[in-house]
Image (cartoon, rainbow, N blue to C red):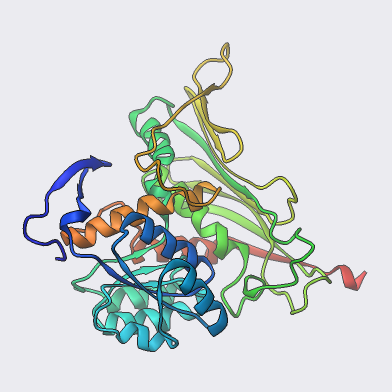
Length: 369
């Protein structure tokens, strides 16, 4: 427990006490990865301004530049970062294929761990990782931050209260413009070996979010169709999907519709829609949160209070949710009490197993025409 004697709580966020940082020991955080790892580092610094950051990345020049920008110290080799005795929390934000090895090393050094999704590239690997931390004394979570977003909390409350009636459809989708950027020529996202593909990048978020909103139902049937588009603009071979569309059925008869497209040009968006027998709730990054409970009334805009208004992170609801997860993680480590809303390895393995069971692949190669 890192809280000094005399620390006290001031207010609550999501029903739990929030540690007042002026009376708490600053955390020491080691982050592996300089892609999304940079955003994670900046968010920790915004939440806990006194925290110490260590950063490790595969590109030494880039790592040094980002470290200087965010006020972090560089440790060149990730193995040395994990072994650094002062570090409380290790954040693993690298290509998915590297997660398991880094995770096992962090467990060996008795660290708290935040790992990017997916936690590994197969459900079996995640279950092996889960076995490794059976009885582990530190907090281990997977970054499914949307669970903590007040908008998602509002939607979940609407479902749980019965206001929407019986839930018939949950629709979650993303319109991305990653690959429609004409300057984009390739990334590890395009390689299965590295753990790429949009099912890993976005699909696991959508599956976790749908299951969380519905209180973790069993999936009884479905299919997720994926398409690998081998764009001739890309410099490296492409074998990971750029888009997917799927339908899953729960044990309660709710349809879960998922989709992602990565060639959306100016139409970048993320949507969550809940269709019930008594009402409908719709969210999108571009149009906000709306709901209706009458055929005679249009969708009404709903304003949800932001408990951390001074901290701005990203544009998508997925990225904007990071500040809430980081806040809860800092408090949980300080209080030595994990929040039950965190996504654990067991749930992460279940999410990935759904993909493994229901995904079907199709390849499109324009150069073959």
